Length: 568
Ligand code: GLC
Image (cartoon, rainbow, N blue to C red):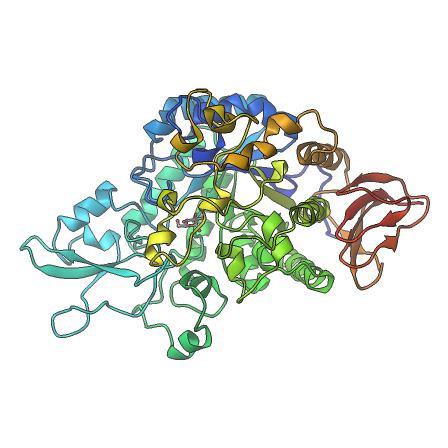
C-alpha cells in the first residue's frame, strides 16, 4: 500500500496521466508544405479529446536546421516558422487547456544546434574564450593535436569529436558531440548555461505549458578530465551497434554523472513556484531502475520514462520481473512509475513484440531486415495486449502517435528518402528511426499523402517522409466506425481507465494464474490478465470489461489480454 496517496483527481495529475506523444513533423500538415505543424495539431484536438488522453507531449518545436528533426535547437525562446511560430503555439496551449488537456514540451539541454548563436560565437572566438567555454572544446592528442581528445563515440556512429578550423585558417581544437556533429554538447559547468536554461523554463511556464520532457536528461555532465572509455568495456560490447553500446548500462564517463541532480533540484524549485502542478519527465537511459529513481527523488523532477519494456522479450517471467523492479525502485522514493512501449526512437511495438529482440536489444533501435518474418495479426494482438497491461499497471503511461491506429514499422522507405542522421553516420549500415516517424494516415485515399496534409494535391512523395502505397489501410478514417478497429479499442480502454478509480498510481496485487500468465489486480475489484502461453480458463463469473482480442467463451487465448471485474 502506498501510504498517504490522495485519491485520483485530488493528487497531481502527472501521477496518473496518459500522455500522447506528438512527433510534430509527422502528425498533421495544415498548410500543404508536406511538413506537420501546429495548425495540424490544432485541427486534431477533437480527435485527441475523443481518444481520451490526458496530456500531449510535443517533440521540439523550436527554430532548428532539422539535422535531427528539432533535437538540434537554434533558439530555445521561439517556435520554428515552418511549424507556425510562437503565436500559433500559444493558441494551441490555450485550446488544449480548454479541452482539459495538459501540454508538455520537449527541452533539449544536453546540446544545441551548431547554428545556435552561442556555437557560432564559439567558432568565431579563440581557444580559452568565454564563448568556447559554453561548449566542450579541447586540444587534440598527437604531435599536432590531430587525434581526438579521447576515445568516445557518438551515439549515432563515428567519433564523438569534430575538429574546427581556427581564425588563422589552421585545424585547431576539437568539440564534443555525443550525437550528430551538428549537435555540440553544452558545458554544464558554465554558469551562463545553467542560468539560460532556467530562463527558458520560465519563458515557457509563463506561456502556460504544464511540463517538460527533458531530452538526454542523464547526459549533461561529463566525468572530469574526460577519461577514455575503458578497453575492457569496449571489448565486452564488441559487435554491437554504436547506439546500443552507448545506451547500454555499463558505466560511462558521460552518462548519469552526479552533477545532473543539482540541475534538477533547481528546476524543481522553478516548477514548484508556478501554480497547477507543473512537471518534468526525464529521458534518462540509465539502469538499473534504482539509478532512474534518483532522478525522481522528492526534491528533483516528478517523472522519468521507464524504458524497461522497450527492451523486454514477450515472455511472462521477464515482464513480471521488469514490473517488479520498476515499481519497487520508484516506490523507495515515492514517485509513480511510467510505462512506455513506443516512442519516436524505437521500432514500433507491433514489430518488436512479434519479431523479438536479437543481438542485445539492437532490434529495439535498428530496423535491419525486411520484416518478412513479421506476423502482422500476432504483432497487433501483442501490441494491444501490451497496451492493456500498461494502462492497468500503477502509474502513468506514455503513448506514441499512431500506435492507436496499429501502425507497424515502415521498412520500405526508399534509401534516398531516409533522413535520420544515423543512416549516414553509421556509414549506411543502420536505416535509423524514420520507419516509426512516417506521417500519420488520416485518410484512406493517397490524396494529401493519405490525409496527412489538408492540401489534397500533395502526393505521398511530396511529404517530408513519404508514406508507402499500403499506408491507407491503417487510416484513422477507415477505423472510425469499425467497432473492432484498433482505434476504437484504444478509445474504449482509455474511457474505462478514466472511470476506474483504482487505476493510475496506487497499489497492485499479483494474481497467481500460472507461469505463462501475467495477472494482477487493482483497487475496486479490477483485474488484468495477459496470457503468454497456451489458452487458459478465466475465473468464472467475472464480467469482462475489455480485451485485446476475441475470447472463446471463458477462455483467454495466447497473446491476449483481458480486463475483468473480479467476483467479490
Ligand atoms: C533523444 C531523442 C532523440 C534524439 C536524441 C538527441 O534520445 O529522443 O530523438 O535524436 O535525444 O537529441
